[in-house]
Structure formats: structure tokens, C-alpha cells
Image (cartoon, rainbow, N blue to C red):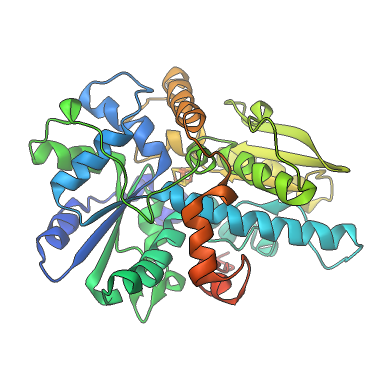
Length: 384
Ligand code: SF4
């Protein structure tokens, strides 16, 4: 009942660190972990570091010290999300422009489980508008327990997938029945940034002085587009970087869509993609989302695509992050850290991630293809 009241899950916070410790202690299990983008911009605060300090490499080292078999990056799955979501968007847009009246636009992003739960309860009549792409957390789990488990010869039931998330709603998301195969969940345990900090302290790891290490591959390689999922506007910016090149067949010279960024509650921008003026809407906070949904319902919406995230600032302000007590300055610094990491990446467009290309060419086939659809897409429910 509380989750219905607070879709972000902040009223039902549970500590799952003991479950993680138990999995790590089980010699029968291969335990892999994924780290969401927003975590690296905030975890340092739990250890007295300045807001906005990037601690990506230290997180990898800490997780290896805790005993995980592989330390992977949710940003890889964010790149995968873009492959599917941008394909779905362009498919819908093309059919819409060709006059197909059955196609619904705008398309809405679907990577925030609190937002998904919100529209399932409050706007179930619009449940066919959001993208069917699973969230990066769930895409990661589905790929880890199929592609990666097969690659290393581990049975699905002997693999434990742990996720480190800025989010409390992700704990609820991992338990949804549609993300299980014969009762075995794609992601077994989701813990928050604060829970990871507690574990690091309990294991007496001197986090501040840790050396940096790189994520493992193949599920640890990501582009700058995957990183920016952590800030409001980032998911749609990543999608437009890819959609632009797929539509125009030209290189996108400047990948920085600065009009998508910042902490205004509702943002809008128009982007020229070939001959088309693409109208983009962005909302963070469910009150702002409601306004955009009411516009869609009354036929007033001018947008082709809308990104919605439940938390202020997007995942950087998530309910599982170090408390920011509404201090916008802290959120700004975390967002700056996210965009700094993006700037520092050699590859900044999801479709150029070499490990994503390999995943499609050797395992998935094409975006929206049969296997991709089976593993990477979902459906929604009327929960009114
Ligand atoms: Fe979780 Fe991010 Fe959604 Fe907040 S915005 S509920 S942190 S997915």
C-alpha cells in the first residue's frame, strides 16, 4: 500500500546488505554486480568528500574487495536501452509521419520504475504510450543471466545479480513477476548508494584512499551517453544522439544538447533532425509529469518524445542517494560530475559502444528483433 502512496519507495526502505553478504559467502554462486550512473557522482559524500566528486574507479575497487566475481556497469545496459528505445521511437515516428493513425505519440521513456508505477495507477488508459524497453537495471539482469551466463558456462540459478542503485523503487522493480524466469529474477538484490556505503564501512575499507580500477568486460564498457542517464534530460539526450545519426546518416558534430539539461521542472526543446523538427519534453518530479500527461490526454501535447523521471534532478536526486535535504547546489554538483564523466569518454554515442555491437552481432540479432524483444522489452498493467 505504501508503494502506491510513494512510488519512489522511500516509505518502504529495507536494508538488503545482509542478503548481499550471504550471496558473496556462498561458494556455489557466481555473484556479479552492476553500478548505476548516478551512484558514482554521490557515494563519495558518505565518506566526507565534496558533492560532485567522481568516485567511479574507487567503487570498482571497493566492490572487488567485497568479493564480487565481476564488477560491471549499468551504463552498458543504458547504452543497450538506447538501442532499443531509439529504434522503437523511430519506428513509431516513421509510421506516424506516413499517416498511420494507430500509432501513438509522444513516446514516453520507461526506465524509472516509480514513474512506471505512477502511470499504471494514475493513467492506466495511457499504458500503451511509454516505450516497452525495460529499464537499464532490468536489461542488465536479463543479459547477465542469458548471454553472459552462457558465455562463462554458469547456470542461471547459480548466478546472483546485485545492483547498486540511487533508487529505492528499484528494489520493488526487481520483484515484479514479468522480470522473472520460472520464478528466478533477472536481478536478485538491489541495494542503494547508502547501503553500499554502509557495507564499505562495515568491512573497514578505507574508501577515500582506494586506487582506481576499471570495470570488467564485456558488460562494463559504456559510452558517455550511458553515463548521462543519471541526470534529468540525460536519457532523452542519449536517445537523440543516436536517433540523429540513424535518421540523417551523418555524424553528429556536437553531442551536447545543453537545452535538455538543468533543474527546471519541465523543459522543452526542438531539435532539427534532417527535415524534421523534433519536439522534446522533459519532466522530473511526478507533479510535473502529471501536467505533461494531462496535456497528452486532452490532445494539447506538441511533443514527439518525453522523458520522465520521478526524483528531483533525476536519479542523482534518488531516494537511495546520500541525503541532500533539498539542497539544489548538491544536485547541481552531482549533475556536473555526470556530464564531466560523459565529456571524458572516448565514445559518447550508445550505438558506437563496441561491446554493444558485439552483443547484437553474436547474440541478439537486431534491435526490436525477436530475441531482443523477448529479453529487453516489457509490458504494463492497469493498477487503478
Ligand atoms: Fe529511481 Fe531514478 Fe526514478 Fe528516482 S528518478 S525513482 S532514482 S529511477
